[in-house]
Image (cartoon, rainbow over the protein chains, first blue to last red):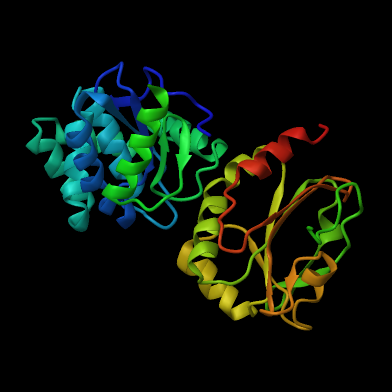
Length: 175
Length: 155
């Protein structure tokens, strides 16, 4: 079960009153999160306003050295109102992930790459990232991506059809 | 039925190599909580994920003054290479010779496979087992159970 309910501190994409809330604990350098990215996009398209998506940081920094700077970059963009734009760009360019790329993405979104550099150096968004991480640990997240559908851990394969079946079931029950 | 040692009993002492020329005894750690993690094998996918998560939560364990020790039957040089490749910041103990001797004492040995179970003990500062957990072998138990157990320890 998800211990920390979704709140205004979260990055939420989709309608506030959506029937289904999908929470991902993810790591920007994790290849499985990279694979989940287009599947989640497809789910969002499929369900429209019925689904809202929440992304929480779960960077395994000791095995993924770029996970932390990538999370800082997305949070930095978030502070400038462009979290989802950056989140998407990072995953879409995951195979080329580097500090240089993160700075280029900031430029691309008309954000200040100089400010981002400072944020990366000072780990400005550490508190938020760490809070996400620990909320994951306490909910039993043991790797990435870990998904929760309406607060219940999803343990099936991260594939479109499997997720649709699970979500449809929840929608049917909640009616 | 879990064959793990029950809570409330004294954790059996042991001495195992941490590096080729350094040994560690459980009794040396009296005075602080110890998290003892038995796992099947270095390099296996589930163990790698499990230890990566524990590695990432070390700072939280430290808040309780707790020491994390992980044990498998892999040899020391294997442990050293594995720890280096994953940047692990805690000790991997080698229950290598006689194979699985300590794991057997803790009911955490799989005779059939010749490896450790995926089992966790939280031992309090007096050396008493305060929590145990036997995970299905293919399941990564994460760190939430350990943290809850540490929170429940008397201060």
